[in-house]
Amino acid sequence: MAHRIFTLSPGSTSTKLAVFDGTEQVFKANVQHDPAVLKTFARVSEQKPYRVDTILGLLKENNIDIASMDAFAAYSGGLVSTPGGIFPVNDKILEDCSSGRLMEHPAILGAQIIGDFAEKTGKPAFLVNPPDVDEFDDVARVCGIKGIYRESHVHVLNQKEVAMRAAAELGKKYEDCCFVVCHVGGGLSITAQKYGRIVDGNDVLNGDGPMAPNRSGYVPLLPVIKMCFSGKYTEDDMKKKVSKTGGLISLLGTDNMLEIKKRIEDGDEWAKLVYENFAYQLAKYIGSYACVMEGKVDAIVMTGGVSNDKDFIENIRKYAGWIAPLIVYGGDFEMEALASGAIRALDGVEETKEYTGVPVWNGFPFEYKD
Image (cartoon, rainbow, N blue to C red):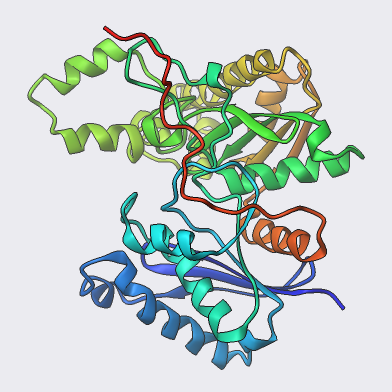
């Protein structure tokens, strides 16, 4: 019989969850948590009992018993940088997540909640390609200002999942392929995935890469510095321009692609130019990551919600299709990725890794000293 897997991903005021029989999703929900109750907790980790009770209540309403699961898998942050892979939830993971020493964000609850379920049922719990994965080559980290280094902050879980799917579609192993993978949603991440590793990618958290629907991406630095010191904006204002109100929102006042395309149909030339530039910027990065892999690209893999837009995909194909064929998986496969990772671990298809709490990269010990 197929393995029964419970998957979970905590958000700010909700928790996404799903149940799979093998690769077939048989239940999904987005459990809503009362914001007023969440505000009563001083720290994120203190939310765990409340969230667990809410989740178990919903499962009971739907006649789902966690004891019937073969394994649990979660999206969970708050770890030091790790290689990609599947990690059984251990004491060190729970220590780093529950302490919140690296981040205070609901993502740290993922490991804690499935750790609780694993303890109650005696079944294994796994983290699959957590957001703290960093597999960059050293050469990809160096920038032109000493003390600032590039680190991996991309949509690792979905990025790796669609790369594995693309490899299977090509009849190859993931570890034998080279892909440029583009996750285009509200945020945008692009990676160079070389023989099973994300060797380079744009730092989504710090404003690197092409613009996204609500993020600025890279912009010329000196004008930004002038804005910072103009007296018109606070530090928080500038952070929002980079991470929340940049990109299409800044240029067009909306990141709704249907609305933007309607404006183009109605003759809005500015909307048409910005829409074209959206693909143009991404295609330039696709080309640069093809260089990272020395031109050996098996496919350009497109994913995320915007990848459902056929016109956008055709614009990417126009600019970058000569590099490699496009393989498109519109949408997000986070829950599926968690389930498939747990199944690979249970079946012994992929060897699990131990989380040690030692970062894979913590600066260059040999860098130039003033």
